[in-house]
Length: 299
Image 1 (cartoon, rainbow, N blue to C red):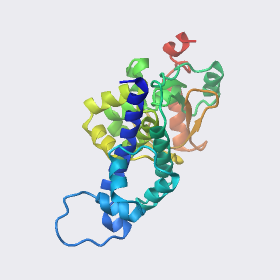
Image 2 (tube, helix red, strand yellow; image 1 turned 90 degrees about the vertical axis):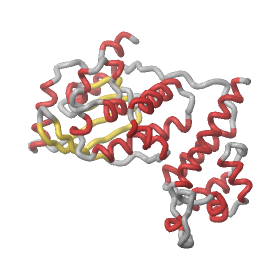
Image 3 (cartoon, rainbow, N blue to C red; image 1 turned 180 degrees about the horizontal axis):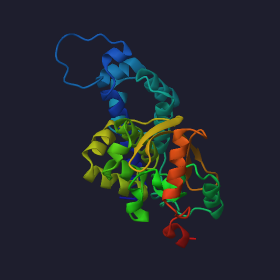
Image 4 (cartoon, one colour; image 1 turned 120 degrees about the horizontal axis):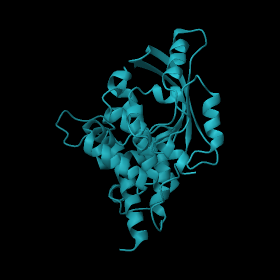
């Protein structure tokens, strides 16, 4: 099989999986359909119901969900988004998957560089005592200031190359007690990975992480199957930290220009508050430089 055929087939599968997941998780009540009292064997909407709601033929929709139709028009995508009540982030993800399915890629894109520019490490230092870090597109922790590492209790015990926020949430024993809303945290985490992996399904850094978590975490596998995607929202997180107690911080995450998908994450607290006092303590508990040795060695 030619490389371009293999890549296109993978993309088609992502589009199919997303449509199937959204259809089976949309109930008739959600879209205003009245159903009889009899037993429904299909979870969510039936294919013919969704096709009717979207105003397309049943045969066309079946082909689309099975990956045999790879070039749906923008109007078809918009009609499906309306029928499924997709939010803006889900609608955009549907468009991106369709665009990927319609083209041929010669080979999977290589893993992005893990190198963090010296200027960004300086930014992390100037943000102290606010916990801050730089992460890659698959949530690898690439660089940090002392509080940025100490905030995720126990993460420093792992080798630098294994420090990944998704891996931490699902596999580190401290994560479930650190976050009182752990269930909500992991749903957002998986949805973010789904959104990234859906538009680059063969990327080796993503497939490696997802494969590991599917194997080691039943909770991850269940959420991955749902195929939820979400947009980024303003963060406010509460941490039950074993060293500094309970603290609630406001968070911001921003894309870094001229980087291979790297993002800067920062948590802040109002000066003079108990939360800020806890941040000061965190900053003093981990006297480490802003980047780990592996990152420095790659430069």
